[in-house]
Amino acid sequence: MKIMKKTDNQIVFVTEIDESLANLVRRYLNQVPILAIDEVEISKNDSPLYDETIAHRIGLIPLKMEKSITEKTTVKLKLNSKKEGAVYSGEMTGKNKPVYDKIPLTILKKGQELDVVATAKVGKGYQHAKFSPGLMFYRNIVNVKIDKNCPAEVVGTCPKKILKNGAGKITVTDNQKCDMCEACVDFCKKQGKGTIELVPTKELLITLESFGQMSVEELFKKVSGVLKKDLGEVSKKLKAKK
Image (cartoon, rainbow, N blue to C red; front, side, top):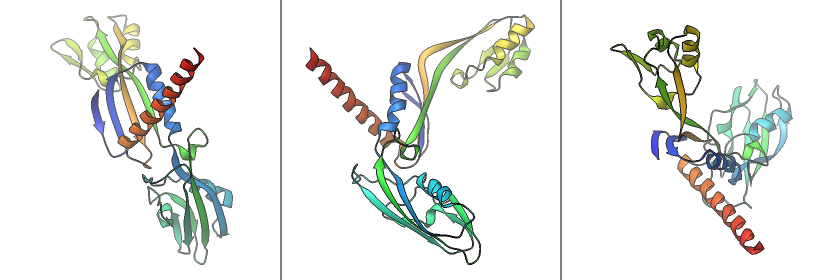
């Protein structure tokens, strides 16, 4: 495993792994328990948006997770705004505050008010998108095989700018950036000179991103833990049937 890029909420790495296993990990993101707003009580809404619209926006606000949170945890959050201008997620108060303070909810004019009480509970992404902890996507690392007769103009066709013409020879500067768009392949075919072949390897370039409820490292550990537990249960049931 080789880490290519890492930020607070995202990690990009290369590893040799079967696509079916990578897809299983991707799908299991929605099996990680996440705290999200499930019920919204609006006692006053003078804004131009319907109650249902505001409730929908509030429900999709990512909330900070704590280690003490269990699947039975419920949390109350309140929002009371009377100021003129935009109302943001950061104005919500409660034990577990929003991850991002600048998510716009609605707009108030002078003299208008928005009063909301929200109840958050723990759920999983397969039940509703508001419980999703993040996303994962991947693609194969590609070997680019370039025929020596390819025209030099093919360099300009690559949208990733990874083809280079030096000393009359076309080379690839970074094959990990190739997303198999085949622009170079099509160009050579049209010109009738040389060929370029894109050959997928067994390595995958994987991007894992957290929506902020927990760090990307913790998210990966949680996914691995839930997957390991479920595979263990499957193994026990298969042994019991023998």
